[in-house]
Amino acid sequence: MKLSALGRIAAATGIAVLATAVLPGTPAAAAPVKRKMLPVLVEFSDASFQFPDKVKASTPDTYFGTKSDSAASYLSEVSRGQYTLVPAVKEQFLGPIKLNLSAAGCPQGKINQMTREELTKRGLVAGKDYESLSIVFPAQKTNCPWAGLATLPGPTTWINLYGTASGIDVVGHELGHNLGFGHQGRLQCPGGNLGACKSAGASHTSIMAGGYRPAGFSAPEMIRAGWLSGGASVKVTKSGVYTLRSLHGKGSGTRALDIALGGDRLVIEYRHAAGNFDAKLEGVHAYRVPKGSYGASSLIDTTAANKTAANNAPANTDAITKLTDKASKVSVAVVSSGGGQAKVKIALNGDPLSAVDAAPSKSATPTPSAATPTPTPSASAGTDTEAATDGSELVPESGSEDLTAGGRSTLPLAAAGGGAALLAAGAGFLLLKRRRKRA
Image (cartoon, rainbow, N blue to C red; front, side, top):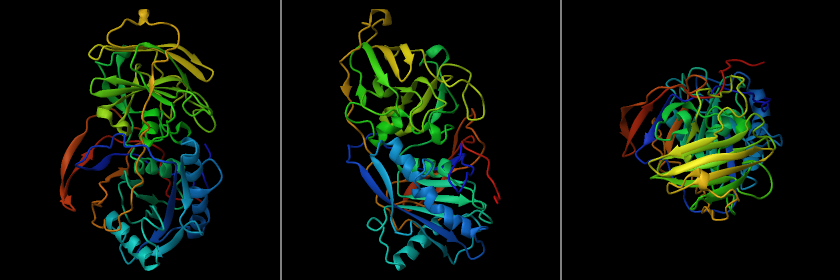
């Protein structure tokens, strides 16, 4: 996959600073968004970009270029024009700005605070002149344990740059966090038994996991963002056979089925090559949404053959054929799938699948579209732990290429800004090898 002129950088997760609030659920719908993005190149008193001319020349393309691998093009396509990034300044970025700050110790809070102070000196007002801030700085000497960092949800991203190496796989992933999406995991449910699922690494169907840019976002994430409106997402309230169009395809049609699963939700989608997405994804996929938090969904995998970016597993490896949840009295079976359309049989209230009418049901009701409220940047979040005043969490990216099976532990972290926080340490996550230099 060819990325923007900035190339690619490692982005994986091993830790996340979590605020006391859980991931947001499904807020009220909002009108299409044009969001003013301000990329700022930042240097330190003891560290500068290795190739500043290349960084300056390629930054506009990374964020606002016309090719499909720019952040603006990517978000516009995946949202069907409902979310657009526009440059906050005519130059499309600012900097490099030299901060009177040592790079040592990865002081992301100070970097944010001092950068915003410099912007204020230049007459730029957060929330008015710019709505999102992306701080790009040289990685040398910082020893940051992450390649990218983002407030979740929120207005800020940090890109920890080696040489000229970065790109949409990192920037798009971090902007997904800003929209309220967490890291998408995988649940292995042998034989489709939803009562016997175990955590098993990372999804491959979203840029928020191991899918990279070509996977776009998954259906639960798009519901979270409010991008599946006008009947594109429906809540299933009656047993029947439902027709799905490909998630990222053009035109009208149902893209997601949303089913009650006790206190959780079950979201069903169909993936098929469309535009710049899903060339390596095919079939019906399912996700468990915990307690209505669509940004915290996990892919349901009924097999042991996990698909990753590094293997040659078939495009439909993670696709489902049948699911059963005895506790919620829900059963799902794929009737047909392929060529841009799928038919899915759903039995509720303990109805047997064999008794479900083969004719497509018309009983599904549109899901109220959910949209992330446009967050207001906070210029006052300046502690080293970045205690954001907008209720954001911090989500850093570091570690190995793919999230591996394993437990997660929580360790106490000093409260910052009056809000208690937890440091969640997990297995490694996502994306590519970090490059220290690039010609």
